[in-house]
Length: 323
Image (tube, rainbow, N blue to C red; front, side):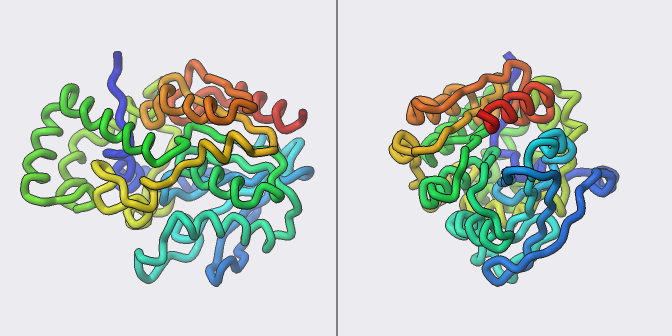
């Protein structure tokens, strides 16, 4: 069975790529966008299509919205698709100090953005870290939600930590040449956000990106990670400076299971069979709590079903939102 990697190199694969890959981000076709002031910061957003609004919350913990293009454009035939870069991401303002970044701020930003754009009730889709934000937002502001889509995400910080522990074990057995360097650095006191620890993975970054996030490794070329599309400083500010081994307290204490069980609006849960970032066993915990939810397993997808099985993923989302 092919080993897959989680957040131990998530920030690395987002932030450390050849400069040649950076031009690709500009090649993506974006709908017209502009800035709006949200919670005192300039936030970039784009709107595509007409109809009921569908707000897309990006993943990564420091990721921009770019990787949603062009895959969600097909939904603009029926919905007003709203893309945005949260504070610290993409085109939006960045913090003067990492202490300005927090999970709690990300949640409040969704509500502030909804109001700033004059939107009534919205469909919300959150992917990966964005799915964690989406759960917190939906439970705090249920009246703002029409329907909720959770893609490739955890229901709790404890599950996030369990995945880290499991994948670190896999690295130890399957990638011993990397793990030996990691062990030496940790013995010297380096945390996962340190440049020294990140450097230890660089020799294998292309292999990791290609093999550990996708059902088909060739699809890795469809994602561009660079300092525009991912802010590693923000990622570690939110998840904790040593979060690839031990999540910070803000993330670790999160738990949405009881709230989802009582959530009054329809929920769709999307899971990738080959997802090594949010493995199916952990992703299905969300479905066990939200028993009213519709759950779809994408059999030929890793962490990005909308990239690997675009047509089917969009058909599933559109059918769910139109019910």
